[in-house]
Amino acid sequence: MPKVGAHVSAAGNLSLSLDRAWELGAQCTQIFISPPQQWAKVNHSDQIIEEYRRKTESTKISPNFIHAVYLINLASPNPELVRKSIDWLIYSQKLAEKLGMKGTIFHLGSFKNSTEEKALKQVIEAIKEILGSSGQVNLILENSAGAGNLIGDSFREIGEIVRRVNDSRVKVCLDTQHAFASGIDVKSQEGLNKTLQEFDREVGLKNLIAIHANDSKTEFNSKRDRHENIGEGFIGLEGFRNIINHPILKDIPFILEVPGEGSGPDTNNILRLKNLIH
Ligand SMILES: [Zn+2]
Image (cartoon, rainbow, N blue to C red; front, side, top):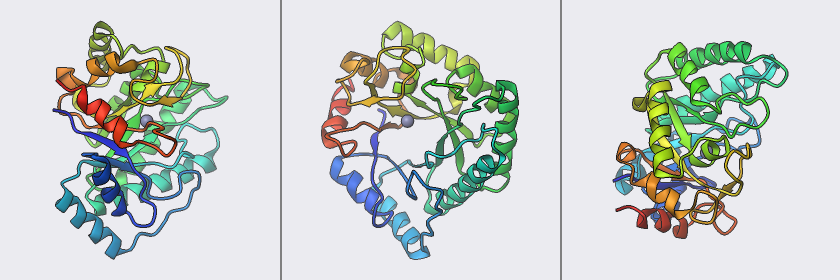
């Protein structure tokens, strides 16, 4: 049975994220380790790290993931931005290792007025550099919603990166809203079967490490990144019933990034998803 977890706040102290998850009934988490709109690298003390590790053991809440800051762009034609992105991801990977977390989930970014092939090459080099300075934790690419010149809105692009980097630490997180908005059918049973077959062919199912379970505020193929509460969007309860009961996804952690009542994933959304499991 898949675990159902959520993006939770780590404000105040990293281990508070596990208390918050416990209260919500979340079985696994995703957190920010620093303010997501800034490049800051918050220094978490050894004591806080130790406390987090202890609480992971006592609550059994796992796996746990870091979500990178929103500014990351490995595909940018601006070298300064790429440098900052690489350095931040190395910082995050080192902390993930110390905390006993799975790794960092991030968006590849946008190549703006550059070309796709140039951007892909640059992204691959950047990922290799990050892996060269991180331990055993996973570096996790998330599929994007496909607006503008974003890298990573198709399984073909993600697969090409995974193959060319060729390192087993590189994994993929599939966001249901981003897929749906990119014109990838995750909603109907038949569409989902085809989608997972294509994922396997292009990326490899062994590389799928997490699902971001988000309903969609916008229509299929809208190319817009707008998350909605489970069952209140265009994917709907039937869509999530298909997704969460798919045999291929039975061991994959599901992580909610939904708006809730305005302050993020809540017990209602977690229960809605858990209740769909047969
Ligand atoms: Zn996501």
